[in-house]
Image 1 (tube, one colour):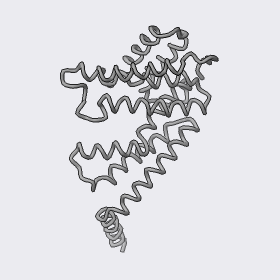
Image 2 (cartoon, one colour):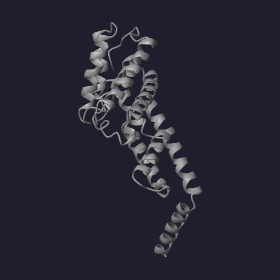
Image 3 (cartoon, one colour):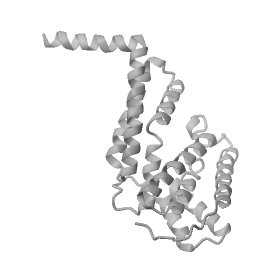
Image 4 (cartoon, rainbow, N blue to C red):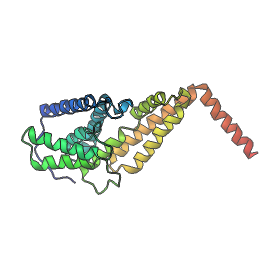
Amino acid sequence: MGVEIRESPVSADAFEEMKEFVHDYLAASVENEEEGGRMRWYPWHSAEYRFNHILNVVDIATKIARKEGANVDVTRVAALFHDIAKLEAEQDLHAEAGARIAREYLRAHGDYPESFIEQVCAAVEAHSYQGPLDDLPLEVQCLIEADILDKVGANGTALMLLRMGYESRTHMDAAEMVDRVIERGEDARERVQSDTAESIVHQRLKRTRWFQEWLTMEVADMAVEDDLDEVATGMGDS
């Protein structure tokens, strides 16, 4: 469990200012690159996508934190800063860089307790941790779970289908791509620890499976392919 902070140090106006700072920082990260930003040709590595992902993670992490008894301010501020350096730093360094940016911002804006700043920065720095979550501070766990969950469900499916176009695939590969989202969801279900995150995974997996079922029912060649597979299996058994 994190250190409890009884009074909320982050006002609604202060949080909106943080959001604006993060948005502008991401945009500047792209503009300052001679080639238009790291991997900008991949839409989900653009400033627009990255900021939207951050807002999604803020929303999910806040819900988990409230239901699981974590410090909501620490969790949501860490979620807001967790990927701020994603477009300018290498993947294995962006969490540490994001923690530095968060520390500098929080110390320069407002009179935040040092304990609060350190908890936020520790969560940002740890958000890419790939090990088990059960021994982590609850705020870090909430952030990691939210980061995982944003890639599952309807949003994850939309991104995976968008990826098909950039890989020159046709819609006939859609069921296979949705399968990847389901696999990601199953992996997420194995990794998350909180009851709230498990509930979200269950709901999002259900929606993704429904979509895959509707897809295979409505796209004739997909259904025919499934039928032929069943026939071939039956012939092999005879």
